[in-house]
Length: 450
Ligand SMILES: *Cc1c(COP(=O)(O)O)cnc(C)c1O
Image (cartoon, rainbow, N blue to C red):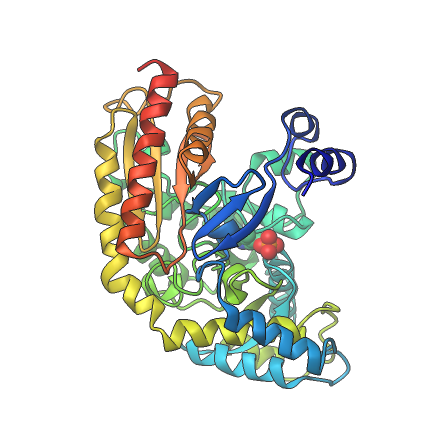
């Protein structure tokens, strides 16, 4: 494999997502060539423990032959057919049935898409259709949260609360954002519990300001992922639940990251005891081996959509792609048969959290938080005041480089280092992760001169 040739062709022809094209060409790209278990290997043979599961997808790691075989078998039997015009395929029916078994209670229908972003587009269409069929067309506004991530189509980016994305494209109408429950950054002098209530009450204030008769839905990730693994204070979700119960507003849970086991339950909604009306999923549903996303639809919404009123004029060429559905089925079978989620919840999850919290002792770590199989480290110059090194997120960028140098993939979100490792890590691999993260922190501190 000619590294130089591939890198120059990359620079000449491939436009990468979420990249500064100019900077990337100057610095060169990291060429990943193969992977096994929880490790990726680059073109130089540098092997790294992938504590991000790819892009939050490969919850079972990189070596699950059963999923690959299921895709292969399906491609050999029926490589493509669509689900338009009253057609269907065995794999898509079977996956829909199995998903209703594992979904939060009362969610017995699923609409398949090709990705998480598309699924959130579908949510917008379903929410609108639902209120129209209920003859409440004035319910139009969706409330979301600042610094949320809901994908990168126009609807996804509008629903999301990322400033950088909004700056490059104006948002769709009828979407508003409230503050996020990010205690470390925005909690000030409040205790986390006080701040959780405060952040949740922003929802009620917004509903009253807009008028509940105009609010269609509230969308949120159970824990913000791309925003920086922001785990809301324990007081937050119970208060949100109380507020939503008071008004007639749909609850959309975006579980593209937390679905399929990451909290130690199948879904984050179950972890937080929330009954969503719509639930977005993607990423780990196929262990990342084949593109698939979708919306799980609660009975309340499905009953209305199925009650007549004509065609739902929405769908994608690859909705319920048979190979994607076969990959989903194989993934769910492994999660179930090998009790992967239960084992993580009982053993390796608490162990990871116990060891991860130890990193909070490090001189440049202001907070080490985590839950299930995610974690975040807030890099700070001063622990007591939570002051950062600078406002350019230099510390995070350095730590990411140091982490890779030490054979560990962590992601930097500003000055927060985040992880979401494959659920299959052993205790020994958890130790390896912690040792490498500690080295990365030491090297970062040294580079920052502290
Ligand atoms: C990744 C992600 C999406 C978008 O999924 P794509 O498959 O990239 O379109 C939506 N919501 C959340 C919470 C995500 O993490």
